[in-house]
Image 1 (cartoon, rainbow, N blue to C red):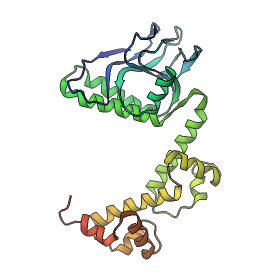
Image 2 (image 1 turned 90 degrees about the vertical axis):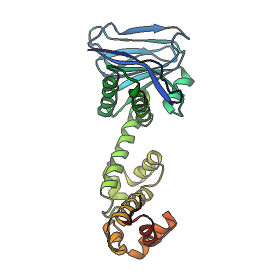
Image 3 (image 1 turned 60 degrees about the horizontal axis):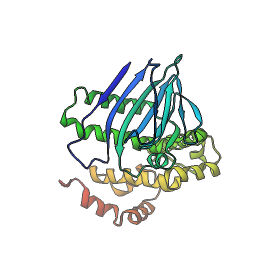
Image 4 (image 1 turned 180 degrees about the vertical axis):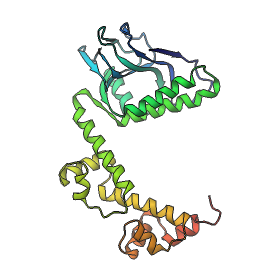
Amino acid sequence: MHIHRIVPKPSYPLYVCYPDMFGRYAEFPLHEERRESGALQEYNLHLVFGGSGYAVGHGGERVELKAGEGFLYAKEAFQQYGSSRSEPWDVRWIHFTGALPSGILRAADEAGAWLFSFSGMTRIRELTDRMYELSDPFGLESEAAISALLYELLVHLDQDTESLTGAATLRKRNEIREAADTIRGRCQEPWDIARMAELTGYSPYHFLRLFRDVMGRTPNRYLTECRLLEAKLLLATTGLAVKDVAERIGFSQASYFIRVFRGAEGLSPSAYRELHGRHGHS
């Protein structure tokens, strides 16, 4: 497979990121490049989905890259990489400009090259496949969508990449996010730290520290936020009594629910319903 798209410069000048060219190479052993410093004015992102190959890192070392790994070269950086001749990469790549506060862009800018492992292959396939579709043929009406897809891809990678020496960290991060999704989907159930930690197999202490690092708040704070989100939906879309809302989302006492809700939202559940409930508000 050899997909290679080149898109015109965007007519709208304020996109936070936009591709210059992108594509996918599979069973293409001639995919090999060496660019001197200053030769390429865009970032160069490669995501490996199969096969093997190499990239030269910022220290000049040649690093072997396989599925689930990739590299990002900064603008104007020296670049050298290539696919194995005997086991060619299945690689999705993008040359792009970007001006967004991104950890992976910052890492590439500081070192010239950022070599990493990544997760979420299914979503990345979906995003890049959609970019290929929108650019064949290219129309001006596709500009915003292509920029948005690239932005989502970069945000995804910002959250789900780790340096090649930090693969274990990436695995732990993904385990915490999976646990967070489970807790959100079952937030009405009786959770404590021990039960939450069982979702990952970590000790309660280790789980608490990891969860706070990954999610930016404690598990109990996160659980409360999930429950209050469900409460707001019930208050806005149903006629359930406040005590029934409290019970349905996992609060055993309506008075405690009211106090927590008021502390988070600045108004009582009844006042929230009056403001956002089924009276034609939107």
